Figure (cartoon, rainbow, N blue to C red):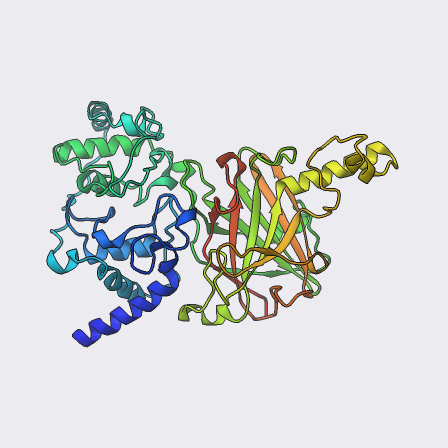
Length: 478
């Protein structure tokens, strides 16, 4: 038994040091290299205090609670679901390994799990009683009278680690950290979220907690739920004829779309929860069509301090995908040392610059645009870059702070974005031929690891503030 435990701990250590260390740190203190980009902050395992538990408040979690957190992730945060990239054995290994960061697991045992009786039927009467309890227990001070997380105390709350707490919109099904069905809500009310201002409501009777559960559940806007996969396989569609970078090209109507889950690195109440991906290839080129919901297009190029919309594709270079479950792939957040990633980025403001430049060239009818901008005679758009001719850029990185554009002579990506009816549609296009040894190579029957990032100007995204996906497996055609 001890030998098996030691073997499991070794496996857990291997996985942790490859997958978890960037956020949670080498000693489990929640201060890994990525911490400057994350809000809420990663869990400090040294205290043995866990938010997600099936045990009463103040108790250690069950091993199964920790397992479920790793496997299912935590919605609305940078903690992804690892169930599709790790085996069950590997997750159990990580559970054992992170328990080793806290002496609590040596000196204490978890209490019995909270018993969840059969869920009583919600009725108009139970919902009305739950609303009354919501008001009387002053839930609105944090969650707001409309449950949207804008109560009078919402912006002044801190956890026991002195980290600022983010209050989520309880009407949004995508915002529930641990699930939004009635059992999940009831368990949160009964067990609380230890370490945070969200206490256990055990001063209420069981019936009162169910009534409160029914009320909260009745306010959830279920039609807003956006299911998507954390790690999926996406097939590239072979097409006959020419491929271009027009987002509205009819060829996309016949190409399957894959929904990929995205994670906000910085908490917000209306994050982009998923991105839809289509891929087409012919004998000469490959194109990616990306779509995501965004009610407000942020594409101004007139002021540097404005926040703009953008999207990027990231590719793992080398043979990483062939050894994915050996955990030799680059870190999905910008790669890591000696494990380089290739990144293509489209920005709405760059496209605005190009479109504005074309309009000026047409309006001036032959006047030298460089003279207009640099000569001081006319300066219609202060920030206009006369040298930019495409709204995309190709870059490489091997860890945080290493993002480097490829030389201008090696740029080989074209692209275009269109915003219509609350949806951004962006196409990236590249010939199959590469210009640089740091370009991703597309070969038949050779899978590619691909990930995505979205910057939402309305949420003040810039640089490391964004939503991202995990690695997805792109299956090239035979």
